[in-house]
Length: 359
Image: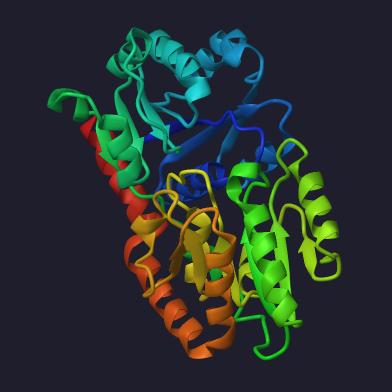
């Protein structure tokens, strides 16, 4: 197989599932002998530090005019480093990446990390025509993006599930002592559409019945939403049993301290990397039917699915898991087996590399 030189363009301001995906794919591609570069905004020290662990980091002023003022310098970076493929990981960066494609003659691939329907106006038709390929991270995303397209147009769209770096989660055995506190956890962006308020309200019902329950929340605050969550926790009198840990660096340690992991999203999830991470760490997971989570989880077998936004239903499932250790063990066992079979980053990266050769 050809050894590729790849540029990932990341325009995000906070660390989320899409950014973790780029990190894990970059690490695996480097391991296989490919050269990986990641372009981030020059002001984002967090992204620079994280990606420097797995790739060569390039910086530019991406947040101003969608990066267009930096086109000439990045064009030279691409040519000087003989980069083969430009990977765009944000809709905000498509024009920037297409300009780089036109100036360098390189292939440009768009990664769809959100579950939004395709648009069919002339502008978006032009974008699709000039993009060499679109990677969809779930069947839901593929279906939304290809709806209304003819068969020839659909040929540019590839389904490649996200995967996780399994080696990153093999450092510890289970850190939580069963029978002491019952710990529920959430990891992800702190944003209204993530349903964290739903989780807190459900947890309040659970804690009213079982006083040894605790809730841990980690992730990056988005637009000050943490303040609203703190107000809710205070209002419910849960200050001593709900803990916010900021951006967690050791996610394995976090997952393995839990009895149950919850992803309570009300937004349509494009995938759900944190579910795979928790499942591989041997933690039973509960999530909603808001998006592609149902492509990861078979309800009742390797995870639990509830209706999005339903405080009572989430409480009921958490109560069942609280009371039934054997169910927790069975769901956790099946969940880990599912991730090992389907969501290893090595498998995901292998499919990407095959598509790179085809494009």
